Image 1 (cartoon, helix red, strand yellow):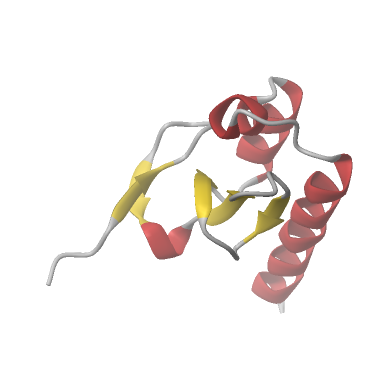
Image 2: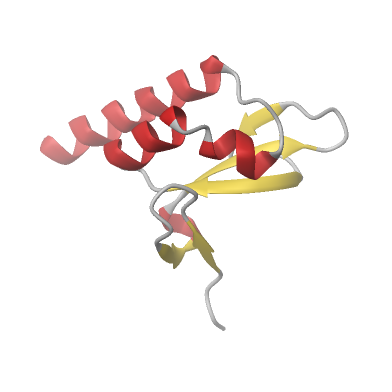
Length: 89
């Protein structure tokens, strides 16, 4: 069976879905969550440049058609730091 591919909202790279972070605008309450829920989704590479550009140019907000709270970006930055630390050890 073929794997599902998605595109990063920042760098436009296409890769298997498992390689991206998923940000979801949950239906019907329009709240924004990470990796859970059903609704409109946007995918982001787990890289510093992609996250910085997505935040600076509001690419996640545009893709989800909703404002992304600062807390979501903080959670993504923490994930990025965690993955960088685990790769260095």
